[in-house]
Image (cartoon, rainbow, N blue to C red; front, side, top):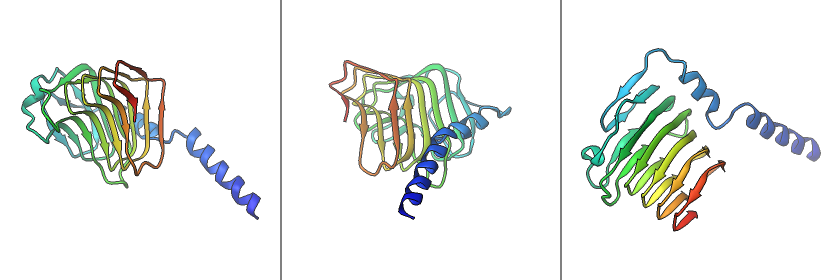
Length: 190
């Protein structure tokens, strides 16, 4: 009985891993949405959908201290930067992109953009099933920060010239960090 239970758990983990856990399947479905939404300024995203950054956001976009430029509050979101940059002003406790969804929401993906000169370049907080891919995080205090999250994948990013490249706090259920370029950070992963 004990051996059968272990085998079931191993099969379940393999099934989840091979089925595209970490939001990949949801993100692929979201990317096929025909009604894409455009982002040109700092804003909150509170509805599922495919959001495209159409221009650079400079000088923090007017973000105040302890605020976020783009705050994702819903699951079922893809934020595609189309190669654009979200640059801050270096103010204390500001965040370029903050993902803060309830743990029952899933499927947030951030891709193809740069975040620079923030306290937190990209921050996942209380999030389930999130991906960050092809993002350049540079000249931030924390390039990518993850806390109290489940099923987070951080892959194929360039993380450089930050105080801390990737910060992972307590409360993480599953996280995959791989194929990232980490350079010139005081601490690469904490």
